[in-house]
Length: 89
Length: 503
Image 1 (cartoon, each protein chain N blue to C red):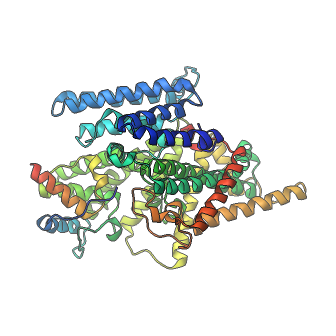
Image 2: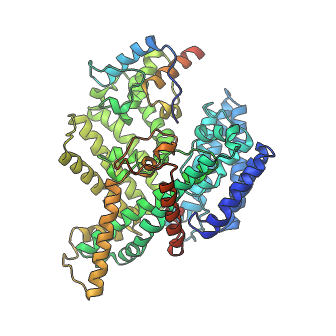
Image 3: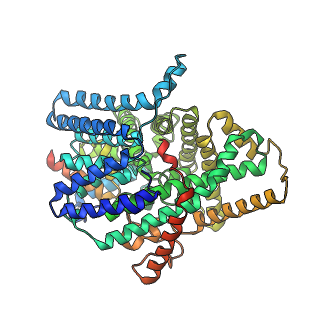
């Protein structure tokens, strides 16, 4: 299902997420935007997806349910879910 | 009832659609109930005795989902979820695996008749219970739930729907307004699927059945004909079925997820699983692979072990974070299709493919060549692996699979001898037909790409080859589809049931 428009301001979360990507993919050159998806990032596959999520859990102090992972197609989806969880916390 | 039967196309579908619109005038609840009743009629047309099982399963799972939602935050919730999953699995084991398990224990038992679609509606409902436990199933009305499980286009062989994508559609007022645009688009998608099934898949059935009936007699040419015929039959049969399901749903103003995306164009086995029976892959990822991989990865983090690419590239990291979730998931994916040893070996074979694929990416990271030769090479290698897997998938026993594969290697001789001219002509015609089907598989756009203008599925669709072959509501397209309908209806007589009905 297509994602809703990325209208929220995700910048603080996005900055931290960029570091998550660089750490997990072991590539300091990686640049991400909210629209970035797995096709845009070499090495972002099903296996790395899990590592990205767990690294994000550690950085932001949130927990993801396994069934939520499928809907995280773009970096913006991940940022939005983190903000929802931080807000709920 | 079969999608490719006169009773369905000429009576059930138009009457159900007309009844749906009439009922919608009396309110959404009436229209929804009409669809549930029609779906049960569709389901029970062949074996009415299966209907009570389906009804009880839907009612019991709905009750379980309400209990799970009502006990949020309490320990009882986990017990209820565990009991709900266990009951569903017990039903599946009873019909699908018990006779085999008893046989392994030396206790003879008759294999019961498998209720249609039991693997599909059981898995769909287990997913819903898990989502209720996680608080992710927001739409929980009883009618939306009954429609989500029983709606006839997906009931017997998928696509495997997720409640998040379909229950809100059943709850939306716009679903209950007649739309000529959606009927036109749905009909076009349905006809493409019908042609795939009747014209492309079914003519191969006899060759496949004959080859697998006497696999030890297959020389090189015959073995390759058998294997490639089955691979093509399976693709056009199941993707044709999925197209028909997506098209029918669209006539009722509902959008389904895609189930196939040109899987034989895949350039790796990882890519293949994202393009073949996509809703099963998604289901397995959500409810099996992801929970296992998450647990393993979190445990490694808790122990201070690296989970980045460097950590994954260690022996322990690769075994824990890559091999473990893949092998468990693929073994169960294989067994999901049936209790035979061939299905387990099929799953394990693909687990081996995926392991090598992930190891290659991890340990030999370099940009993939984009030249035509490199792309063709990757597609050929991937398809070769898939072809071997499909032989194991189809064969009635591992011995049969070994015989067909042995024949493909020339172990039963390489001579191409024909008894007479008629047989030689028949072989030449079949070879030409197989070549034509491969041309369609590799050079033509897929159904979503042809129907791109109407947004055929929930996913975005990238343009395919042959841009002129894009559906429009124009007179030439109407004429072409009218001809397709005539051809499809004319070809119904020789068609059989869909391959995936056995699962």
